[in-house]
Amino acid sequence: MNDLKNCKILIVDDTKTNIDVLIQALRNDYKLGVAINGFKAIEYAGNQLPDLILLDIMMPEMNGFEVCRKLKADAATRDIPIIFITAMDSSGDKTKGFDIGAVDYITKPFDITEVKARVKTHLSLKIAQEALKNQNIVLEEKVQERTRELNEAQIEILERLEMAAEYRDKKTGNHIKRVSEYCRLLAKATGMSPEKYNLLALASAMHDVGKIGISDTILLKPGKLTDEEREIMKTHTIIGADLLSGSEHTLLKLAQKIAMTHHEKWDGTGYPRGLKGESIPLCGRIVYICDVFDALVSERCYKKAWTMEDAIEKIKEGCGSDFDPEMVKLFIGLEPELKKIIDAFK
Image 1: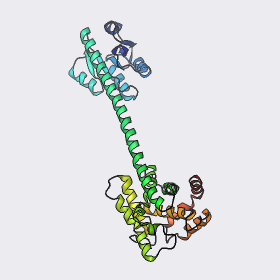
Image 2 (image 1 turned 30 degrees about the vertical axis):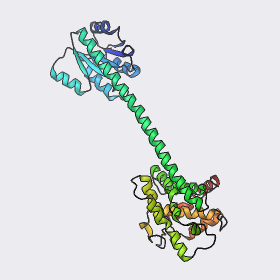
Image 3 (image 1 turned 90 degrees about the vertical axis):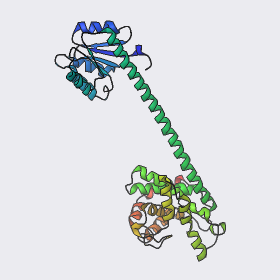
Image 4 (image 1 turned 120 degrees about the vertical axis):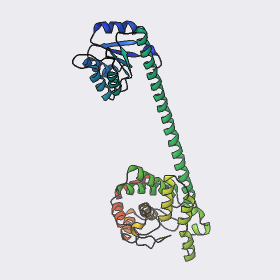
């Protein structure tokens, strides 16, 4: 709305003389509507949504105060400014009117100049408020869009960094996608909220980022690692946690926790800290079982891909030793969905 002439004013009064005076004063400047009682005023306001209401107080059946209360109680009409027109000029009446939502008072008999001035003032204010509201909506949409773009950029950077680590390890980007989707499914099955399980799925992409710090002679060795080399390989958890440390970003903080704990075992024989049972963060327990499962069903230079059935059996064998028994129970119940993920990201 940017033109006062397009504004609609509803005049509510049970006296024809008062209506005629107001129409005469305002008809050349605004679009007008008339209601001769409170019931018709409420009906008109709900259907036509006027920009301003001039409302008489002293009316039979339903007075102006009651009409105002009903209009302010309705979400569709509560923002319409109401000016009371009345012969009641006591401070108590005015206070009551303002308390229930009126923006102004015009007393009878009417001063036409005053009527025009007050109507113009409140319509101009309403137009300004609506313009500001619309501007704020546009700004909020721009902020949300910019935030979404930044979040997507951050997520893509994380995924590409993890892909760099996986590339050196002769794995594929699809390994990241599969593990991420397994984690989403399993975390959802634990009862996590959508916000939390989607965040965990994103953070899981960084679980092996620490392999960037492992030398090629160990990372790409085709044969069995020596005990010393195996100990060096285990440090990828600490390296990854160090790379991701120091951020206040929720996603990175979760990714750091996963990098550090995704090789901890339920019985305490895992690494790097030998955590046991529920002292292992839930995110670590979830990513561990998902990562092991995908390693089993994936082909590597040193092994063929296991069948899904064999991989599930191996997960069951690790129940209570390698894996949280509750996670195993939930995970094997997801078998049909797991198969779909494997087929989708081969």
